[in-house]
Length: 171
Image (cartoon, helix red, strand yellow):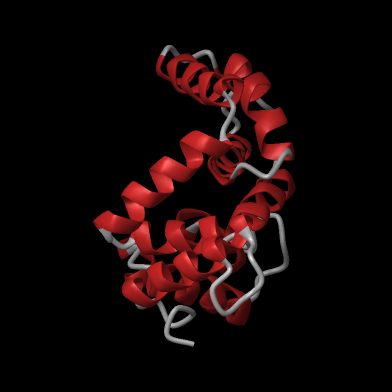
């Protein structure tokens, strides 16, 4: 309960429990989710643990693709960025999903498509990605790609704010 309410130490503890299988069924994916939530709030121990786990679980090809996508973006080659991010996003990588959402919302390297942006933001938001939660809330508030829905907007802003996202805290 405390972890779901955004307490970083409780989130870290849940991550450790899921990773080791102490008191719960062992689930490394769930562990990574809780470590990520804690790390995003500034818990250094969670960040170090998450970095270590992701290095173990991320193949060098995936790491390379994310770095290549970042480099392509900095060079303004959004078509290449999209080509590199899409396979990662389809495999559930929240960073890739978030960045695809941003690309579709802005029309960077892809046709501007609010519904496609919603799709990618939602996939990442449902995995606890606070920036995606905030962006999804904004799209519901504006009725961009979805019918305008203030209650749904507030839900996503609240989830993001509970993780310390400063923009969501003022929405």
